[in-house]
Image (cartoon, rainbow, N blue to C red):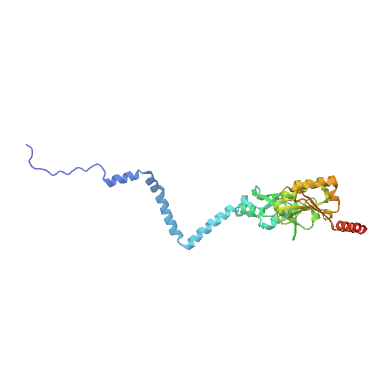
Length: 294
């Protein structure tokens, strides 16, 4: 007969995890959380320990000195040392200038050399058009120079200057006869129009040694200067054709072989000739004689 007395039975535990336990388990399965536990937590602990250790000035200075000594030991290894400078492409004078503006105390570690700064310094010299800098095997600081090539002599109030095809300053010279192979240009702004000047010099080649140079006038046109103090005044536009016309007149009529001081070609339709002082006086003397005879 079944008992009528109820017995208190202990309820069985629910095998399913609690909500928080379930969330923790899910979190543990997350790759980012597992990475943080594996690497982030140790790193943070090491960072905190390091900060505490380096909080002491003496210990911090010891660490810095140790790092600096280790770095210096690496940088001063023989394979990283530079002991000599080699310069190619430069004249003797330019090479001496480069060594003067780069007072490097060899031997020196390659880590202590700022190659870009060295390149800019060398390229800043007037005779240097371009420069490249590199460290060659064997501890050689190699500097390759592309020099500026002078194409004309620019006469100014303060002296003579060699200029290249862009008008850039190359060097100063004391006398014109030091570079007789180069044409002479003068006048304000002549360096900015050196291409035009060279075209005129080429066009004046039939005049030979009579050509003394070309002068820039008013920043806009040129005069061609010949021996015997003769000048050909050229127009602002079409200067080369105007000069070629003068040379044609010289070949046909020897106009420049006469007592001409100025030949003004600025107005193409009306060239003007001005005689020199001696010829002018002689002309007036002859006219006076003719008038007296009348």
